[in-house]
Image 1 (cartoon, rainbow, N blue to C red):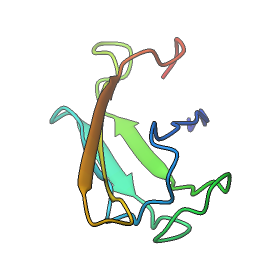
Image 2: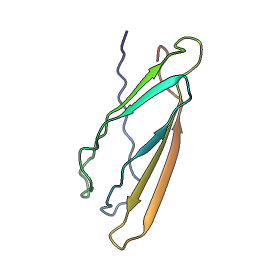
Image 3: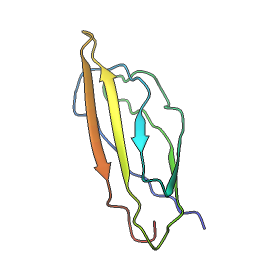
Image 4: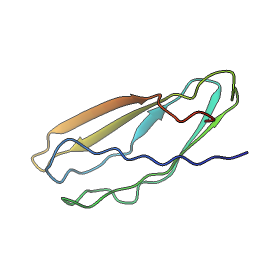
Length: 93
């Protein structure tokens, strides 16, 4: 059975950054597929989306966990890295 869960992550910087590829990590029992981002740069107030598919082979035994690392480059060339762990999936995922 496949279930879908949608969430949003907002970059904390208000300037329009350039986006290198996003990185994600999962435990070994989880299969991860990253889709292509909808854009390579972000205009102020415009979202960029990216599909992340995970398959938990230990469903019901081990909880799903995901670590995401977003790197972006500010107009002046400064590189900023934001990383977060996402473990609060609804029950059943």
